[in-house]
Amino acid sequence: DTEVTQTPKHLVMGMTNKKSLKCEQHMGHRAMYWYKQKAKKPPELMFVYSYEKLSINESVPSRFSPECPNSSLLNLHLHALQPEDSALYLCASSQRDGSGNTIYFGEGSWLTVV
Amino acid sequence: GENVEQHPSTLSVQEGDSAVIKCTYSDSASNYFPWYKQELGKRPQLIIDIRSNVGEKKDQRIAVTLNKTAKHFSLHITETQPEDSAVYFCAASRSGGSNYKLTFGKGTLLTVNP
Image 1 (cartoon, each protein chain N blue to C red):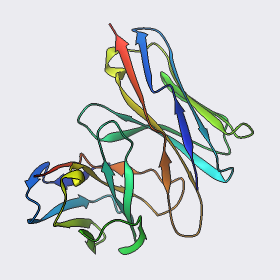
Image 2: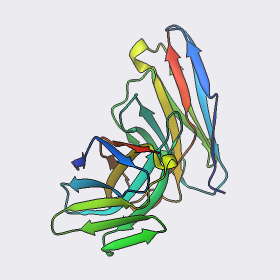
Image 3: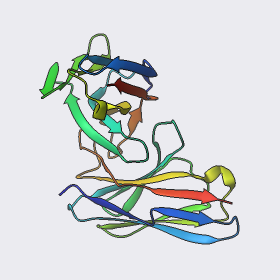
């Protein structure tokens, strides 16, 4: 089973709201990722967690706050977002954090900031 | 850092024809090259990958070739079908410490006309 599950599928939030995106995988993967994808663009890496520790932050604004409660779960907390943050947010996982490990993407959460 | 160039940006073929998408990379230390297919509104899905110790890999109608000397790799789809219509992303990564970075090309929109 190569399933990465994301909730919610769609989210509309105001610029003063606080919301969270959730991601879950049960493949025993020890690396989890958040990507952001704008229309007609490739996925853009935001964060990498390796063995539940944050290993990469691609200079993401602090209004995005990741959290990895355990090896199966990954959250992205959103606060005071801007309209330009509207995008598809993809969670992904791989067996390990290293080149050659296949990255499996979730279906994504479509975020609209109004 | 790594830079991946992908061509063409759009490709239109007739059903049954072959399609070829080409990518070049800049970092000679890159050693893993996956290809993802993303249908409209859906997640990127791995369709084939190749590692630097192999020159060619085939899976039914899909094949990938790698030329390490020239630093380019290509996706070949034979006997195209309308369901092959999607955006295809190439990517490259290298080993480096404990961090993992997958650099994507800008994508190719493939349209297969029935």
